Amino acid sequence: VLSLLPAISVVASAAEPIAEPKVVKLFDGKTLDGWKVTKFGGEGEVSVEDGLLRLYIGNDMTGVTYAKPFPKMDYEISLEAMRTDGGDFFCGLTFPVGEHPLSFIVGGWGGGTVGLSSIDDADASENETTTFHSFDDKKWYPIKIRVTKEKVEAWIGKEQVVNFKHVGHRLTIRSEVELSKPLGIATWSTAAALRNIELRRLAPAE
Image (cartoon, rainbow, N blue to C red; front, side, top):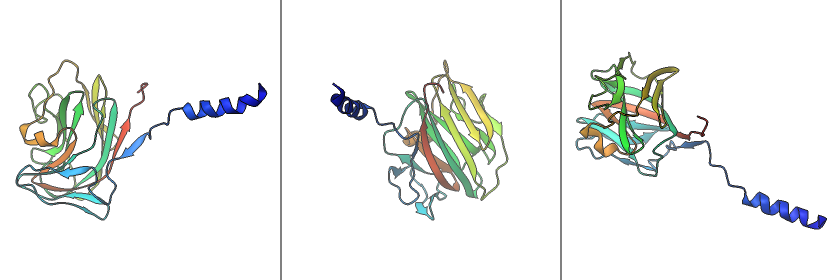
């Protein structure tokens, strides 16, 4: 009986599930692997340069859409964004909330508006998530979105700028970013650089 114990131990170990990585890099810093240029019409150039994903000024939108499977709930997505030219939003991050899309706008409506589009058909400039901030050109801004069954939360740097209970609200996006679904990043008449685009799935306790 004792001689069987090591074999039993090996079988039990082999049956243990392999844990998924807590953080998945969505941009490798070298290629557009996993992404496609969004064909808005009039889009500017998209390139990977010096480890950065660069979106150049278009007429009016330039962006990329994630082409691989992406979770619909209980996740965080984070990135760093920099406005390099122009005067409007340098990060329009479209993402899923269950079966519904939302966009987190950073620097819209003339350069300073932050919020979610759209809530009950009200844009980021006119709903309960609307705030106003000053953004400097050529400065990196860490951005994070957290999506759970109850809330959408967003941070710019260490400041939480959105804490929105989405249950019972109508969640939509503007028609201009329809091609960004389910996950995409776009700019409006603005050039931007992006880096450190990452996904983290949330544990049940979170």
